[in-house]
Image (tube, rainbow, N blue to C red; front, side, top):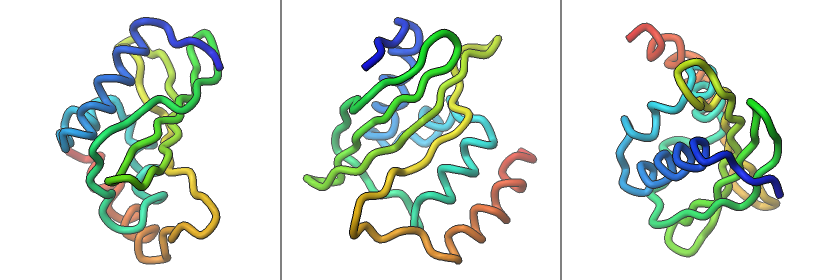
Length: 125
């Protein structure tokens, strides 16, 4: 497992804690529009409320890292894999998606359609 640079470690921790606190703005400030699209498409409906997190794995180096964060919905964990890229403005998630295990309910056609339709609308803000 790679080690995260201190500024990326701070960003990952800040984003994960915002997710636990249900601070949508704090979580989303690290997401590029493309990451919003991939994340929305990977969840069936509304993402679940979580009560804790842990960094499950880190891979990469330089300006690109993949960080898997394990979130806990009560005692049921799920992983969100995020590809972070260092930009002029700081570290940003350029792709994010839920990692699915065997037997997990995956997003259906409607969830994927909503993400495809609402993604461009959200980016116009």
